[in-house]
Length: 248
Image (tube, rainbow, N blue to C red; front, side, top):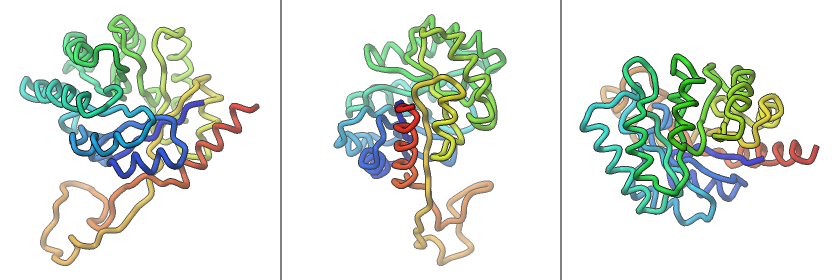
């Protein structure tokens, strides 16, 4: 049973590796659903030996990109792989929510023989079977999904159906709302052999709180002094839970 930890910094990657993660996904801006990490973060994260998947997502707010945004994705993809990423995570959709086969193929050409992951963009497609058909035809390694539900535990039945439909032609990675208490049960319910979670806790940085007239965030955000980091204890607990599930 493989535990993948969704990380928001190089430090999170180091924490996850030390706590027992089997693979990590490196992002920035986890509050926005995960955006492209910096090349510097990728280079520092590469100090660990476990596989690192790097997110390629230039902005929040959907998966249908302008020409310059997609060119940025291609440039970032090349740079992240050159900096040591073992593979890339991405999702590209048409305005109607279907998979953009042409643009996904262009990203896969950059990925080459490394691993590729179609992100939770699949959870907003109108027909997940059609989406999987396209991704399997393209040769994508795996798909990260909550089963088109608010969380993976809530979407467990659909995740199982996805795995059965894929029949080994693409890996299905359950993710979203995963914690040490439900990780093993989620794998048992879905029949999957890997799981993805961020396992966040909160750390304080009060340096931006001294002028209440100034805010660096837009919309509904956590308080300025809070930012998410990987919780080593939660990763260890999830890893232990999965080892116990595997031994059953």
